[in-house]
Amino acid sequence: AENEELLGKKVLITAGGTREALDPVRFLGNHSSGKMGYALARMAAAYGADVTLISAPSNLTTPKGVERIDVKTATEMAEAVFKYKEEQDVIIMAAAVADYRPKEFSDTKIKKKDGDLLIELERTEDILARLGKERENQVLVGFAAESDNLLENAQSKLKRKKADLIVANDISAQETGFASDDNQVTIIGKDIQVTLEKADKLEIARGVLDEVVKLLN
Ligand code: PMT
Image 1 (spheres, helix red, strand yellow):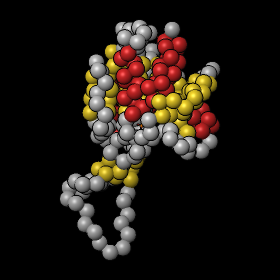
Image 2 (image 1 turned 60 degrees about the vertical axis):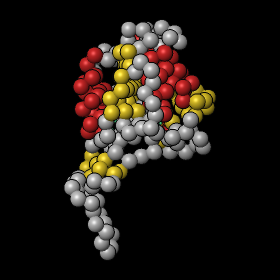
Image 3 (image 1 turned 90 degrees about the vertical axis):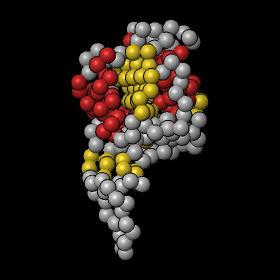
Image 4 (image 1 turned 45 degrees about the vertical axis):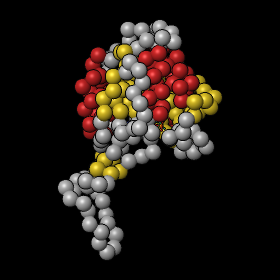
């Protein structure tokens, strides 16, 4: 192990982008590759933690020693998170979870017709916000992917979702955020604001976990 700072701790991490099906062949999704969440899982295991990774579809291989649970939709991700949350010391929501899903699923492929097609969407549950409401003695970390007003929006997510830390990615920057190997983030907490230099996602994961370790101690 890299160090033993999370030895004996249970850490739950979500990764990847959820997919909300419209019909048997189409879905609404996003560009999350799972790289950030998988890097966190790998680094948390290297820190000695007992890691559960709840993964939306991703091509990445499961890091060694990590228990992986595969899900597709925001609803399945919520079910898996709430099934495992009780026993966790730390929960990190790195997944890009759909905020809306199609109101109706068509069992058969939607046929092409003349004119526009209108699809109605309904809200999904906000997993992080519910974790914030229900948690007792846990460190709760959220991510924020923002294209504008990065720090303001991250601050408001910290309060609204009652998280301990929000890791804010500027997705308007080049070569960081979704699907890239590198990331550049600012970690925000009640009393802290730490900006990590652009680095590969494993290094960013280390920086995030170091802040988590401080909160646990
Ligand atoms: O996977 P990669 O390609 O490596 O990309 C990494 C990433 C950019 C996806 C990741 O670092 C990131 O920023 N993840 C969060 C993206 C996001 O959807 O942010 P958000 O602002 O929509 O959500 C804020 C927080 O609430 C997140 O922790 C999210 O997991 C959580 N959330 C959102 C919606 C929802 N219904 N339930 C949630 O729990």
